[in-house]
Length: 341
Length: 290
Image (cartoon, rainbow over all chains, first blue to last red; front, side, top):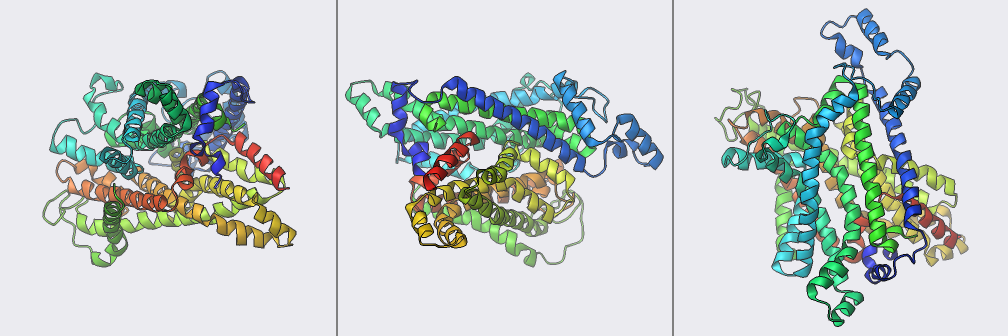
């Protein structure tokens, strides 16, 4: 095991930089700049990969558009109109050029600009994701801290076991069980978001079950990391020293132990955006929410390549940006543990 | 939770769905004639096209479990040699060539990648297996590389090299064997992840035929009749929940049992997406080894 590189294993070393920040070798701006360049390369590579993948999809939008009576001549004409007969690299270059002007092309099936399409679908998804994140961070940190303060007691054991258990339950399975129980049996919340439209806040009750399904996994993983970090921090030399100096218990816990415990969790939070994006796709399917996930599923089945490209770009940029921010935050919170530099 | 209840709970939760999944098809017998959609005559009623739900439950678990398991094994069979090779090579470009494309795959949300790959491939269990293996591959290779890197820098490796032991003896006999524990601990995480991906893909209808007898597909197809006949949705969903909860509880117990500190921290630290440090680490490690 690479024990010396796992932040958990060296709580004492993580404590030091907080007392003498700036002593580390790589400065924050340089680190951030390097991460930014890397993130940019990742986004470009992801779009190229997605383009190559969509090329491999069997059939194309022309076949779908030709409808029930696919006449080869008609398909050929549609293909020419849409520019699908040009070589793929040329189309990719065009797409990149368009991207520089903020133009993602037009949907093949609906004819609308992809940007407008994305803007419409983004509403419900952003609402869902924002509320999830707003609830996720405080709840997960609180659960982790409480479990760490009660280490080994019943509350800790219950929270830990529940966390392990729920850690990887597929959102759709959890969601339908929640619907069966709370919507059908008890009738507390609506079973789907049908008829609510794109503004989910208009009927907040609609959000409750999707949020529960989305929160279950990330809360488990993050609270677990916070707990592990807190347990380490609370048992460390510097916390003992702070206590000896007579600082209040709450101040020791929240101002001295917590920041070190949160650094690894910040990176895990970034990893969970991957889950959240996946979760959003399934949760939108279960609750019939007209968001980005639903558009992705229908664009894939309609072979609407510009829309797939646009959605992939949105998902990739989100993942890369969130990871970048989390790395920078982790670097700032605990320079040596985050940077290893 | 104390070890004993956790083992018992995990075992029961995993055992029931697993037995139904693996042995179910032998007990299903001949499919009974179709009745009305979402009827409630038999044990669990009928589904959206009038098939008996209990028979569907018996038949529908095997693909999910087998695809997830095969995909995990496949990912390890390909990913571990890749990681060991990247860690042990003295040529930096080879290390980069092997690992950078995988880092790129990690930057794509896994479900997005799954949906795109599955749309491009013919539907069916073999294609889904390969796709899920491809998605699990980067993490497996990364963890193998990290574990092998540490072992390859040990003095024992230098001693073996000085004794004139061959590359294969060192790679498989020493590094490979020393990594086994880390890999076993990781196996559980990957299996649970693969199960998640397979079930979610089937639910979304990618990579499976639309009328497949499959728990996740049942959940999706029977949702329309949930008011009339909730069991057709709830039973397969609960079986899937039990499968992943049980698997996780058991593997976590195994991990906790085998030395707490290092192994438990794997997901957090090795899954760290920033490979700038990884290559820097590789450089110093190799400088030390050389």
